[in-house]
Length: 127
Image 1 (spheres, one colour):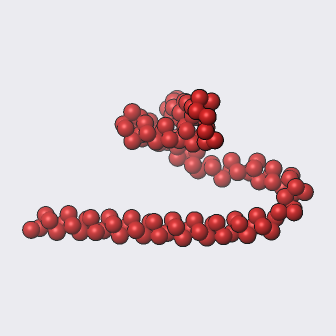
Image 2 (cartoon, rainbow, N blue to C red; image 1 turned 30 degrees about the vertical axis):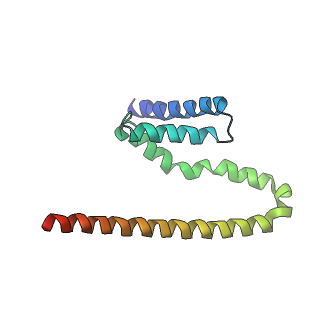
Image 3 (tube, helix red, strand yellow; image 1 turned 180 degrees about the vertical axis):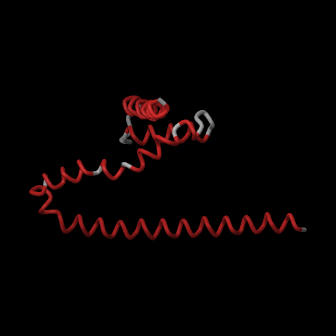
C-alpha cells in the first residue's frame, strides 16, 4: 500500500504538469512542469522526501528499461535515419564531451567552494 501511495503522489505531480502544459502556451514538456512542481513541493516542505523515497528509487532503478521501446523505435526507423547518421553521431559525440566537461568543471567548482566554506567556518570556530 505504501508503494501505491508514493506512486500516486508522483503521478499526481505528473498530472499537474500535464494541466500546466495545457494552460501555459510554452513549448516546455509536461514532464518538466511536473518535475519542477515536485521539486518545489519537496524544497518547500509540502512533501517530505520519505513520502516518495522508495518508489522514486525503484523508478530510477528501472529507468534503463524504459529506453528499450525508444531504441526499438530508432531501429525500426533506420531507413529515415540512415542519411543523417554520420552528422547525428558527430553531434552526439561532441555534445556528450561538452556536457561531460562542463559537468566535471561544475562539480570541481562546487567541491572547492564547499571546502573553502568549511575551512572558513572551522577557522572561525577555533579563534
